Amino acid sequence: MTSLHSSPGGRRPLIGCTTYRKQVGQLNVVGVNAPYTQAIIAAGGIPVLVPLCLDEAAWRQVFDRVDGLLLPGGGDIDYWRYSKELQAELRGIDQERDELELALTQTAVTEQKPFLAICRGHQVFNVAMGGTLWQDVQSQMPGADKHDFRTPYPRNHIAHQVEIEPDSKIAHYWPGRSAAVNSIHHQGVRDLAPGLVVTARSEDGLIEGIEAPDHPFAIGVQWHPEAMYQDDRAMLALFEGLVNVSANGSK
Ligand code: MN
Image (tube, rainbow, N blue to C red; front, side, top):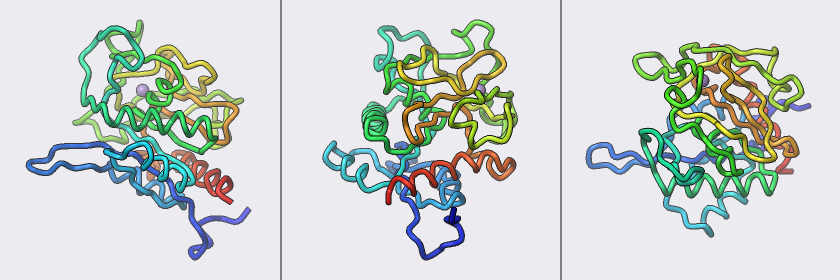
C-alpha cells in the first residue's frame, strides 16, 4: 500500500471538520481547536472547516465534496434531543451546531462516509442514531470515576484506562487491548443507539468507544486523541485510519 506521506504531489483526502461558535470580545468567532486540524495534517489529510450557518443545500454540497468527516469536541448537546427531562446543568449549548452535526452524522452513516467522532462528536454520533446521554456522568452514573479533568490539568493528562474490544474496527488501529487515555468530559453515552456497538469502556464501566459495524469507518471515542498523538503513536493511528479509509472511498 502506498503511503500518503510519500506522495506530496498526490491527491490527499479532504476531511470536513465541524466548528464551534464563540464570542471573543466584539468578535463572533467560528473555529476549531487547532490540534484537530494538525492531527489530520499529520495523518496525511487536508482539514476543511465546515462553518455553522450553512443551510441544508449548502452543507450537502460540502458533504458531497469531502472524503471524510471529523466531529470534534465541544459543549453539550441540548437535552431535548435525546431526553424529556433536564437533569443536570448543561454547558455551551448551541442549537445550530447540534442541528448541523446531527444531520451530517446521520447522512454520513446512511451514505457510508468515513468519520471519526471525538468527545462531543462521540456523543453526537450516539444521539444522532437514537441513543441517550448521561447529562452529568459524575452525579448520575452509579460508581462513576472522575472524568472531567479540565484546567489546570493539561489536555494530555492520563486520566484512566480503557479496555478495547478486540473484535472491533478500532482494534485494527490499536496495538493492544487497553489504552491509557485523557478524559475531558462531564457527559457520556448512557443508552447505546440501536445498530451501534460498544468498542471501549473505562474501568467504571462507562462507554468510551462506539462504532457502526457495517460501515467503512464510523468510530466514536470519548477521549481526545488529538491532544495525545504527539505522546502516543497509537493516537495518530486513529487519524491515519480515517484518512486512509477516506482516500480509498474517494477513488
Ligand atoms: Mn473518560
